[in-house]
Image (cartoon, rainbow, N blue to C red; front, side, top):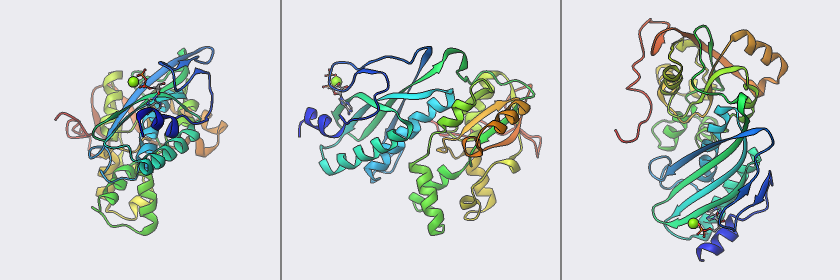
Length: 318
Ligand code: ADP
Ligand code: MG
């Protein structure tokens, strides 16, 4: 199958048509942002052997790449609109592509985000997804707005992504139910889009937890020129995680593990409480894990000592 037939068969599908004037098939997609919204744009690349195991199922890696890319939109308070896909494939394998395409469009359906173009090349398996979202100019949530006195919050549980990878790589043994849950947390980390939208004009700063809480909260602290004081006993852990590994391991993954794609944000605690009264708890399941203070770095409330930031978070090129 040549490149054009491949695109036509697996990627040119009927989908949501949010403000798409020209979709797949011409030199460019032509898109019209919703009235009054600025575009939020982000790209994410996933490499076989680096971001997911070489033998991972194609539908799962397609879904994972899209979830991870959309997570950046969630962290900005942006609504998903469109995405493009740059796909490098070792071979044109129709069974593989069929499953990849299925996983991709199933995940896209969740967010009502539409595929509007891409590029297809031969080479080592690499998937890049660029997402475009809409956000009213004055509602975007930056990393730089945290203020001393703000509470520090995270959505959902932390540590499941790292535990999921450990299960996939057979580094830990867990119950069957926990295995299913943790693997899905790695391959299908639902981006917290709804939470991000609700947090517009309430969160003072926000980031999605992709490299581990310490690393990502560290980015908020740096951008906002503040310190964070966190209480590790308040880190939200899933029952699947805490029941299956020692507490010290669960906490380490929650702090430094990465791959969680929850949101970490800062906000005035009272304002957030008012917001929570107005929404369903599933849409904004948050835990307060500490407080922003003057200074630098991330401080452990229990010991008073600073967490070392350079030892945390995955870094390429080191
Ligand atoms: P060009 O050579 O002008 O860049 P291509 O031949 O690469 O165009 O692509 C033809 C059309 O197919 C374009 O509209 C492009 O956006 C789309 N396309 C290519 N690869 C993909 C893909 N993997 N997924 C979705 N659309 C794709
Ligand atoms: Mg091209």
